[in-house]
Amino acid sequence: MKERILVVGSLNMDMSIYTDRIPRTGETLSGRSFIMSPGGKGANQAVAAARLGGFVSMAGCVGADTNGKALLKNLKDNNVYTDHIRQVQDKTTGVAVIIVDKDGDNSIILDAGANASMDIEYISHIEYVIRESDYILMQLEIPMPVIEYVCKIAKKHGKFVVLDPAPAVQLKDELMQNVDLIKPNETECSILTGIDVNSLQDAKKAADIFIQRGVDHVVISMGENGIFYFNGQSEIHIPALHVEAVDTTAAGDTFTGALVSRLATGKSMEDSLKFAVVASGLAVTRKGAQSSIPCLHNVEKYMRREL
Image (tube, rainbow, N blue to C red; front, side, top):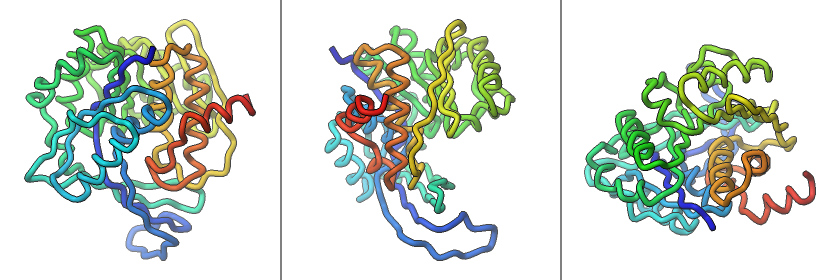
């Protein structure tokens, strides 16, 4: 039986331009192509979890504009339940401007827009949704007081709380104690723990700091070095998928959504991590954020063939 996943987070319209390299200050470069596509870390993870087999609802805010309507439609088309997403009349929908270089790496500028309108009053009205869910998945693109409140309420109701700490900022100990699983990348680890993760030994040291602060499970994504998992006793290392990267946008979100969707179907942590590595690896072979997320059939087919 699938357990219910609630994603509380951001929704953005991504505006991506592809060029040979990231421009320097004051420099103008020619781009190869430009696309607009649904994004936002919260929505990306909701779509990934749903497309990869999860039963998913989302809570968040969009503007009452064309972009907002497009984002809601896309979520519905991907079987994400959207009745708890609020349309804010006096705000525009969040926007991300993304520059992607020839290696698939990117630089991103965000305008939060309606995402900044999420508040504790709004969350208090949908507390029953938190109570009825099994997994609560969050990121850091919405106001921090909301994140802290959701984690506290979710913990009160005994839910499994997953936090993707991006974009990384310092986190209070109380928040960390209400998180069951945290999933930073190397850069976020450096900000949150002070440890530069360049090896598995570094990852173990950083993970141990998270454990000491009250988190039960730590998953550190290390790019080409794969992922490292630690729960205070057991550790798992899964190598990265070796593919030709076209666009790394939403690769991390695909990993997180895939991991939670797999856990929610009762799979083991190791199986879920392998599944998430494949899903995120396949995502970088296509352009865009949500448009790059593979479906369940493709991930399972790859796993049967290669793993």
